[in-house]
Figure: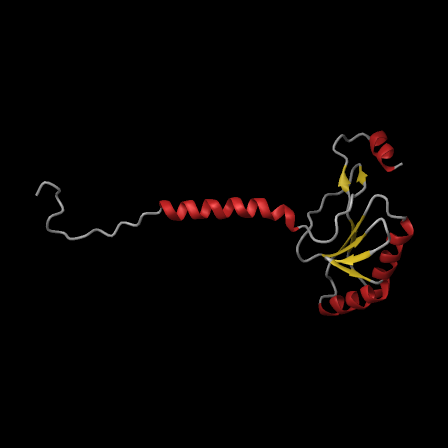
Length: 147
């Protein structure tokens, strides 16, 4: 009778400490891995002043143009005609699917223009160019970075 639970039987208390430990470990793992899941090849985006900011979304079709003039759709290297065919297919499924073009700062303009004309040819409704924001806000620094 010293404990006060003599006649009630076993208690079913849930110990949540191990559950919290597992959830915190999973959270840390996801926080470390998420930045590594960037789609497409690594390119250095041009820095601009007064860029409208729009977060990259998973439903965006990402087309990357490297400084060597290679075209990627997502992570897959594509020839220009194959890229056009796949874009047509994607836009047949969802005609309003947004397209994001990500080009390296050293990419010749003619290669970016090829992709933009291709998007126009297949009837894309929403096309955006990705860039990095110039954190200093200095127009002269942005121009120096560009040239």
